[in-house]
Image 1 (cartoon, rainbow, N blue to C red):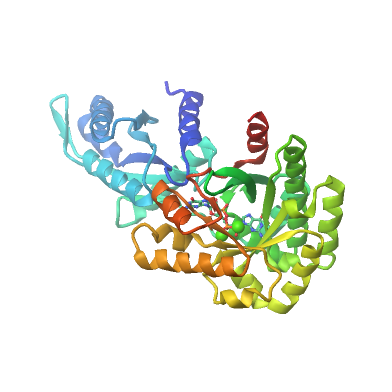
Image 2 (image 1 turned 180 degrees about the horizontal axis):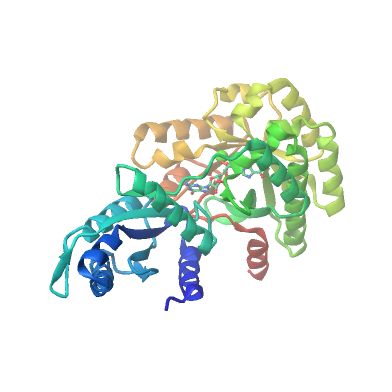
Length: 411
Ligand code: C2E
Ligand code: CA
Ligand code: CA
């Protein structure tokens, strides 16, 4: 008899090892019209067919994949460390093909008709049972599609429901903050962290921050969300500094949040409350958001800066501002967008653009941070170009703030 708890534990263990770059595929494979086979060839044949299907599946998977029989002719297949959705689709198509061959068993032969449903972790959720249900639901969709497999797709979310849920999550302290290290060059000492917000919706799973920030902006809770954010970030900052780490924390600031009446005073109050110096706090505002309403934003940023707070332009290079124009703005640093950094190794033009950005920024006394560094080759190029600081998976991935702080304290 199938042990449900054991299956879910098996899924959970693999979910824990999954990441957006190496997702886990959860597949449900189901044979259709088995009843026809049973009624023609007999129940024993149906039973034997189930075993033959399992053997065919086991032969088709990669080492490290896991096949679990969850019904007479239903299977759960776990595919860890995929390269992405298309990799999962390739797997699903292969398994369907393998099971739709004429299978021989007990001197009989049958050709089942098979569909596959796919859910991906962490993208579609991290709860094992939810993932299985989603893959199962996708199976239903596959029956009606042209392909014999389908991915789970989220039902459209009514925006106001999502907003109500977000408001409640903020009130109940159910959002979390991840911290990603920023290191100075050339010695790679970690001198700060960027705070990145995370929200796992009870039914819908993980909602990407750019999505729920947009929801908060349109629904009018961005002020509350940002206040919550600043407070949590400063709490961690105070802990880190109290244990002798002279680090900074960067917080992403939406232009809408900046313009909420009273925001600047709130920030200055919180700095006093947590007893941290203003210059240990950095606000990152995207180039495009700043340029949309440059006068009002500059005025408010200047007030923050008068309190010592530092300002960085995020996603630099994706908007249309000229660096020379930045001189007139109350800005301390630029963060060169990942799209330029990503291409540096293979693309001379990207390398030249980044080099020019760094030179010009330095002429204007701006600090330059590069984001999205994933390999040593890119880091070496940035170091040669004179970049001041770097952030990216190579230096460290974002991780739960409590864990990051604990680890930093232990160092
Ligand atoms: P961002 O400010 O550009 O943040 C960097 C994003 O790149 C983060 O995604 C981070 O996880 C990811 N990243 C960092 N290093 C690497 C790398 O080496 N390779 C790759 N491929 N990605 C890397 P995340 O956390 O999903 O955040 C997405 C965006 O959501 C952020 O972009 C930021 O604009 C926004 N955001 C996140 N938290 C908040 C918040 O609390 N408030 C506001 N207003 N915006 C936020
Ligand atoms: Ca940022
Ligand atoms: Ca960015």
